[in-house]
Amino acid sequence: MRAGGLRKSFGGQVVLNGADFELHEGQVVLLRGANGSGKTTLLNMLTGHIEPDAGTIELRTNGAIEHFRFPRKWWQELNPWDHFLPERVARAGVGRSWQDTRLFSTLTLCDNIVVAGPEDRHGHNPVHILFSPKQARRI
Image 1 (cartoon, helix red, strand yellow):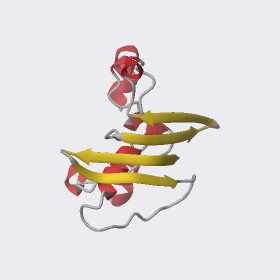
Image 2: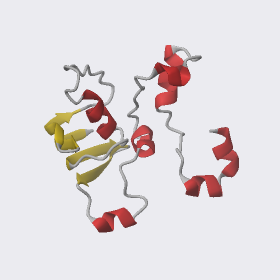
Image 3: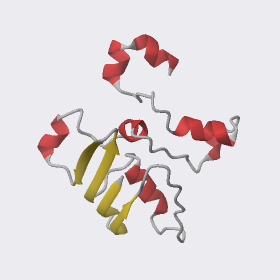
Image 4: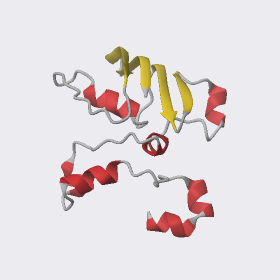
């Protein structure tokens, strides 16, 4: 995964401005910074949970490279298969765990990490639920 020029603001307050980096398969990365420096915002953008205001994200999956440029044009929103969503990022092998441990307090650390990004998850995709209801119920 590669990102360039990522920018995000909330209510006029710029949280990230011009974040650039490259992550490689198998890498473990420490993201450090003061409270309010944009660490969680960056993770949320990289995992498809929030959309950057500006910048690019390149996702490499099984030899294919997908480019996502933000802000998106109105016509890009019409294509349901061209979105940078958490399910797509998880299938590419990028996962995250949440800071709120109360979500799965009965699970071990390892189990919480496994929940973060299994490749066979389809998320809350209504098309998948309609055409594969038995598999969707198992998830």
